[in-house]
Length: 424
Image (cartoon, rainbow, N blue to C red; front, side):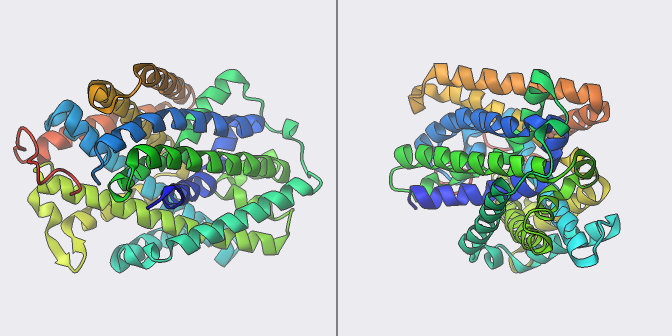
């Protein structure tokens, strides 16, 4: 793999969740400053990308973040709990994107955004991709990425050249505090860059290729997010945004290219979210199976039920279906944003402990960790003021991961054997 192929993988994973599932939710918080919140989130991601690139270059195994935790903290409850937080966060992300799939499918096929049909289509695509396996969408990934980027670029250009129906000033003015708190949500739109580190074992020169690919992908996606944020705010009134936050991008297409644009964007959303579900779901399952093989999860977790299907897949999909059908998109997005930030801050700690091996800059690590830590604190404080119930859910998420690690672990070895590290 070269810089472009690795970057394309990252762009594909980021655009699916960031544009179609998060843009409307972020606009509800950031209002007229949404176009600022996204590049700020990209800046936080770029600083984190430095540590990911250094760690991926030094430890180019497919286990990615779990490998870094094991190397930094040893194979034990701490590394296991952090890996489990990340693993469950991926499952929550799948629930969010599946919900977004249903939110776009329901109005496209039935003309109304009915919760029943949202659940039916979101559950249906998840079950379909689980049964079909990762190969179905994986083989067409490049085509899907190309199609959705063409559709979104066309919408952005049409919106920029059209006479705006609304002014940015019509939307909420969040102030500095509101913008910083919204960065916690927009960061989730870039969280897919972490998956790019898993490609380190498939490139000839990871120390050079991975950093370039990460920064290229984040830069391209940030430009796309900013352009579309402006188009959405100019095309959708505050009242419409509040009513249709889950499908904000498709709503923006109605007054610009017209109903045909709405259909095109909705189809692009279905392709993009299906692709993102496929990639994230099966990445999570592979990590879970690797954790099972090293004693982090019960061995029954990777017991085969059918060709390509395991107990772990059934349990994971069942949990995702429950989250998707009983939580709203806003709740899922906020929980996933917080736990991604927690997991990625832990990567900074791991990098600090391994800096003598990666030869990274402690100043860059401290700068990135301080920035992400500030965003997390402001984000949590904002949630405590507006949605205190979410704070309890996030705390239960982290505590539950620690309890699960204690209950499920099968006496892991004190260190991984050289031939059986995660992801190999």
